[in-house]
Length: 158
Image 1: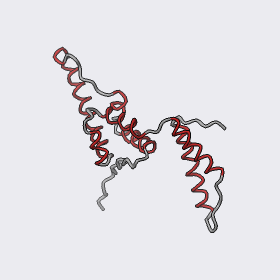
Image 2: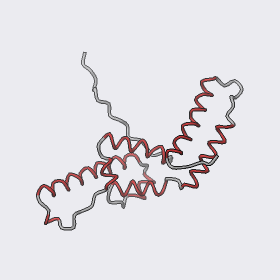
Image 3: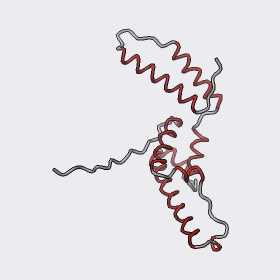
Image 4: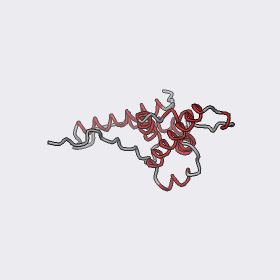
């Protein structure tokens, strides 16, 4: 019996408007492909390309190729209307920074969202006819959202 392909291609996380969730998934995806460092550090063209040694030129070309691959993944993750606003970005780092600037909430917005989640958590009640599993799932969903906002830097004073 012939075995099917053993390597399952991981799905590229699609941006659905929820930046914090998408960025966490996309960062993990890019780290698994070994492209995250290029997004963190960026790529800059050397000022004097002619003065570089062959090894340095090859290293630069390899970084450019990694950057193109990372850009490709980002392009696949972003819907066309949003993509059209970032097509002018030169590097994967520029695209990532642009997405962060446009879609990541400010500290004040995050605090307000965390406060709303806390209020929701404190007022959670089982609905009429709701199963215990469903109630636990809603509780965990709210709790996980609160944890995500706290991990992303929002702070909430009691």
